[in-house]
Image 1 (cartoon, helix red, strand yellow):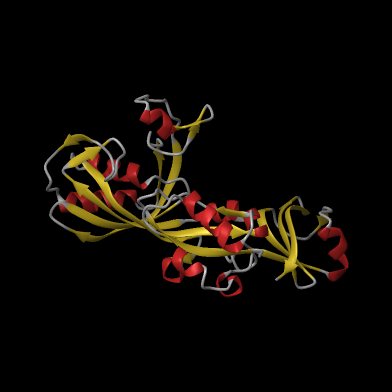
Image 2 (cartoon, one colour; image 1 turned 180 degrees about the vertical axis):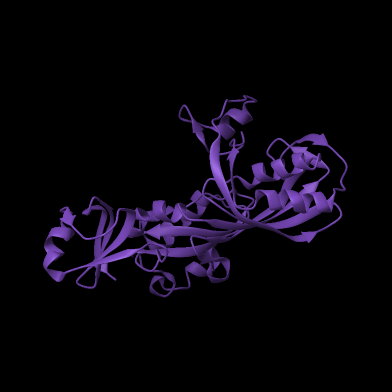
Length: 287
C-alpha cells in the first residue's frame, strides 16, 4: 500500500473528492494528493498512498504541464467559465502579437497574485470564502516559472495553448496576463493537466476503473516515483545507523534532496551538507 497512483480527475470532482473516494476503494485513511485541480479542470492528479503521502511534497516541487483554452471577448470574476461576467471586449485578437507574448514568457520567472476564487488561506480562511461574501482581500504575490509555452491552435476568438510551469502557477491568472497584453478580455474555457512530475495523462486511470484494478498493477513504488532525484548507495555496514536516522559522514557534494539506498532497500530521502548526510524521510522499504 506504499505507492503513488496516477489518477485522471474528471470534471465536477474536487481533488479532495478524489482522495475521499480512493480512501473507500482502498480501505485506508492514508492518502494525499500532490497538487490541487479546480473542479472544472481535468487530468493528472497524483495520489500518495500509505508512506506515499510522505513524498507528495517532493512531487509538488517538480514541473507540471497543462493544455488550456482561453476564450476572448469577456472576463469573469472567477477568471473561468463558471464565473459572473465582469467585462467585455472584441472577440478577435492579434495572432502575431499573441505569439510574441508567449515567446516573451518562455523561460521567465514572473510574479502572480493568487485569484480571489482560490483555496489559498488568509487568516485561516480560504480566499474563495471571502470572495463569496463579496470581500476583496490583499494577497501576497508569488514567483512562478514558465519553463515552456507554445500555441497549439489559434482560432478566431480563442486559442489553445500548452504550458510547462512550476508549482503554484495559476493558469487563470496567466490567461488574464496574456489577455491584458493583447488589450483584450478573456477567461479560461477549459484546463487539462497533462503531466505532473513526469507522470503523463496517457498513463492515468479513471476513478471508475480503480475498483476493477489491483493496486499492485497501477501503483508506482516510492523509489520509481522520484526518477528526477539523485541517489546515493551506502555500504551495507551502515544499514542500522541510516535506518535509524543517524547522521553519517559521506564523500558527496551538498545537495538538498537525495534518495538513499542501502542493502538494496530504499531507506528514504536525505540531504547532504558539509559531507554530512541527514535523513529527512525514512521509509526503509524494498526498492
